[in-house]
Length: 328
Length: 234
Image (cartoon, rainbow over all chains, first blue to last red; front, side, top):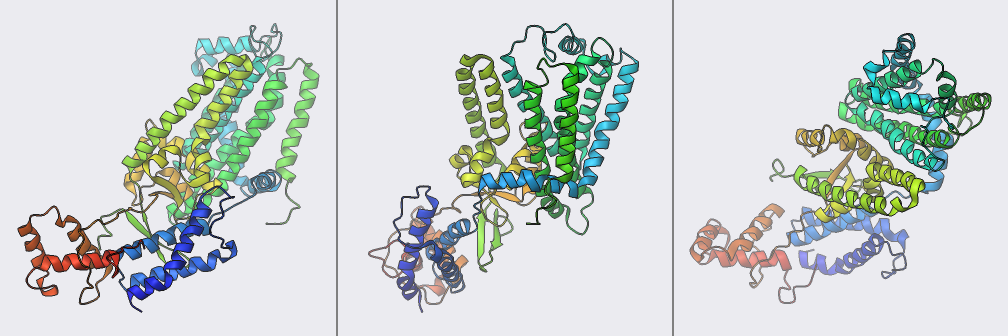
């Protein structure tokens, strides 16, 4: 078969396939002009692939080869497109996938916990014993702000005197922006051989530990602890999980096993992503609790009881959720 | 062929076909980023201006919108068709290493790690990383297994002088055909004597007297086939 016969024989087929692609590429579902059933698509695509290979092997003219290559490329994009039901995949992720992945990578969770809690505890004890020490990790303004936030004389704790109810919503937005950004950065820093994650875990550990240690003296101690005990359950756990995701990335680069570092990273990254996205969702919950519950006027005893419930919820969720569901 | 020096890379699909993808370099990607950056700032300013009217509630919503724009702006666009408005303007798109469209997971990965690529400012880390590997990948691309490619792989339409088409005496390889087409395309810009001089290199292959005309007729044949007069679109 020479080139002209080849073109004449299949011209129509190519044009039909082109129209089918146009249809698939346009978002407008009502635009059904080709009248070709989608079930025919794979077969037609394979045929185009075959024609493309033939035209190349037979050294047909470049314009034709280019045209067929273009059809193959567009067909490839359509055939290997992944369509998922986003709602159910999110539900499945929360109920099964995230806690299960975390349990599989429990080592990194505890490692991350170590990098976060050890500096936090040391800074906390040190700041507790030496009230001046806080000034080495924060400047005077920040310390004054922080102390005024947890002043028992406040109408509502966790905010300074002049704050009003409307600010709950503002603070919700602020917690979302600030805390989840911290979580994401803690994760992505892990790509530098884990160093970035360790840095953020350490840094946040020292800051939070220092503040907690400093405020564990009267008159701040009760107001401070009743404010943070509730949302801390989700928030601290989530930061540790984001750190674990980053450490996982770093570990894949440091200990790639039998793979090239590049491949090890690429294979580990989706697992790490699951952890960090789960962490981000937990931070959304934490922001909600922090903005609307932690600052509410309930008595300290109620706050501490609810905190106990929240902490057990987090533990039970991460430990038990998705155990029964079959491996998908 | 000059596979060493150009920025195409080949991927073999399960159908046994070689796909050629043209990789986008740091400059065009930088330009796309800049366009996106301006769009992001404008979006944010509009949101800030409108929400300012709603007091504490507005401020909270504004902060959430800032958060979404900051981290998810590229993801929202990339999962739809692989390109943010900036990339669309520059004619590039994100695909997986195997040429398939990006999923949520890969788009999220490459855009979360963007914060490291940005470090310390203006994407310096990402820029250096792109220069250190052969596929112009920044760290996010390395983790997600994605590349940024031109949407239509160099959409080069040869435009050559019309001449009666005629097949060459022996079959030519694709590269050789392209070479002749390149010559035909430049023919109009060459002086008659230079045109003749260049074509004479291939004199054994064409007619002895006016080799350039021979090449032109082959070029026309490569481009339009026999049916030169109606030149139907392929």
